[in-house]
Amino acid sequence: MTAEQERRISAEIVRASPRLRSFVRRRVRDAADAEDILQDVLAELVESYRLPRPVEEVGAWLFRVARNRIVDSFRKKRPEAFGDLVDDPEERVRFEELLPSPDAGPEAAYARVVLMEELEAALAELPPEQRDAFIANEIDGESFKDMAARTGVPLNTLLARKRYAVLHLRERLREIRDEFRQTGEST
Image 1 (tube, rainbow, N blue to C red):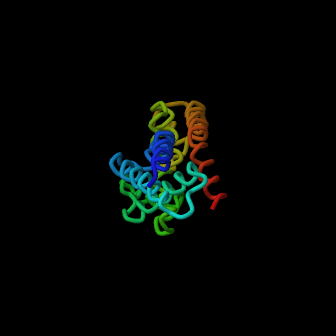
Image 2 (image 1 turned 30 degrees about the vertical axis):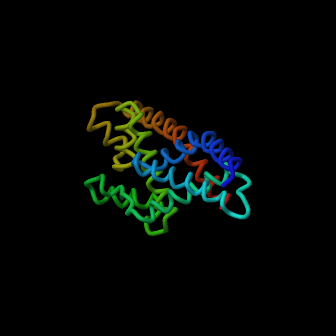
Image 3 (image 1 turned 120 degrees about the vertical axis):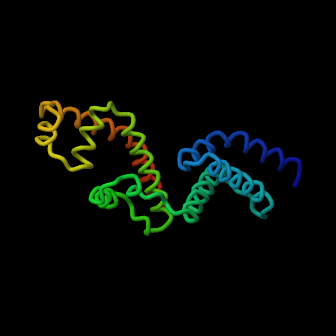
């Protein structure tokens, strides 16, 4: 490898590493796994300079390789099912139907984990009253009338709490939805 190639590789790594690390870290729960994927991608960049035809769009290439490495890592691991997090078998069925099937391949497994992590994080950001109203109605299937009788909170208040929760979740999850749409269009 020539000194010029080494300089270009070093410059590209310095330029792309922070964004690439953030990209991988947002998608891989375990920090050590994320770092391993990042190192694999950067090592592949170094190897690419030994090819007869160098990579032209290095930035795009790095993110494509990173996405492929993330998918590969999900092939090796059994995805954590949301059903493992709830006790009621009826709830498990409802959630499983909303998420991509874990048997639909590594991309679906990856999408499933990312969606669950984002939904859990978005729910955790809600005020407790909004989160409770949303979960009771959307996840547990409880009617607002039953919730009002159980909690003593007026029906309209429960409706408003759920509405605010839905607005927050829509906004919070819009970015991940758009990202999956872009990924689907580019493949």
